[in-house]
Amino acid sequence: MGHLKKLGFFAAFILPALVVAGFYSGSYWNFSAIIFAFLIIPVIDQITGIDTTNVDDSRVKVISEEKYYRFVTYIWTYVQLTFVLWGCFVVTQGKLQSPITWIAFVLSFALVTGGIGITVAHELGHKKSKLERFYSKLLLMTVCYMHFYIEHNRGHHVYVATPEDPATARKNESFYAFWFRSVFIGYLHAWKHERDSLHRKGLPVFHWKNNMIWFSLLPILFCSLITGVISYPFGTIIWQVPLFFFAQSFFAFTLLELVNYVEHYGIVRKEIAPGKYERVNPLHSWNASHLISNFFLFQLQRHSDHHANAIKRYQVLKHYDESPQLPYGYPTMILMALVPPLWFSFMNPRLEDWSVKIYQQAIPQ
Image (cartoon, rainbow, N blue to C red; front, side, top):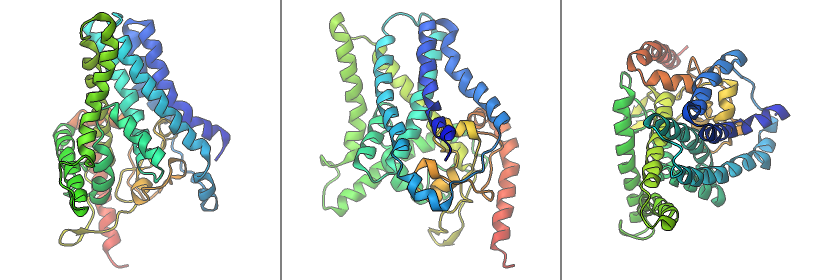
């Protein structure tokens, strides 16, 4: 992998820098990160085009072990933790003087903690290293979505593209209907996975080893600690801190669910026996190998290979020509998903093409 491409993964750090710069510049500058993510990146994506190059098979193992790529994600963990602490502090400084600047700041902030932070948490949460898994949980704590660590790995990756997966959007299902199912049913599924795990160990549900108890409490405790530290000098609770923390968390995990919606809309695996489905392969996720947006998302858009090979590190994920392809990168597709008629008009014909391809594969040649 070329040196310029390696440096490209540091592009993600542009967004928190824009949020900080926008805050101190004041007023409508707080929209800088949003404009950059949803206007400038898509334009550059269209100019630079699709990157279909893959790491040579003979080099995959070597590049997978390069510490540089882990270093980028490790650094992001500390940057996000510092970023959240900074955000909780600065909302008390009186610079956000109108509702519009509050909204702009919170949305821009969530773009960082959700759009990139949860992406990094997702990458780290799939790895065997205890340190990487710890960093994954730490990042998810900052957006009140720690159950994702359980449901995504034990649920979504097992049941993706089946009716059993709440994080797979159905055909003609709007994002808004999908959001309720994915958020609430996903949370309940995480409790079920943890309950089943404890029962196999002969332990009750209400046990200190139940991760879901900790995952539900830790974000609240984290926010309470920050609120207490910031409020102490004033002698009163500074309400802006919990308001900001939970608001940015809400929009952060909503952004995650938008990504989930885009990645799996309408895709269904064949049921080969009652309750049993064909093995996940690169045809079972929407793919988008747009060069620039993939730098910002650590190649999450090469989602087809990720689901076929979940443990693969982001730097060696492959592009597959045969995978169903999104017409644009995630930033553009997310905006389209917010307008259901527009989304259906773009995606349903592509979903039909995918269905035909799957059907043709099943016909003996």
